[in-house]
Length: 183
Image (cartoon, rainbow, N blue to C red):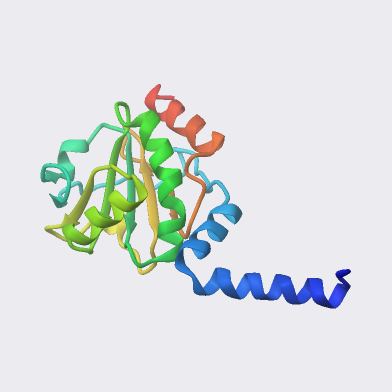
């Protein structure tokens, strides 16, 4: 059977419907179209003034964000049910694998520990994840997830973005290397 233009369009349409209905294919599709996030220069970035943020560790110890002052921090606010969040998780995992000893990763969710651990086991993820004990600093307040922030050693929020992004891009890696070097 020879494919004509109409049949080809129908096949594409059916594939898009499947991708939108089936969560794993939605995440895959979103991952394919994710771009590296926009980065602000430190000079033009807002400064984090309030570091007082208590976090309950789900797969790690509890922390107060205050302990991360003067360090490079990657913060991601997400949920297991959120397709764009699910799409970027493997990209964050790859970044975490290479930077976990240099950058502090803080993934924050309102999901309970059992749901998060089941999701992590299913998808082979292992970054430190927290629930909030107290309200987040104003610069991290968001109505959309995923929301991701990168904070420099100087407390400058150089990345503040919502939606799925390619966190394992060369652009993000160059940014983290620059922030770690204090440049």
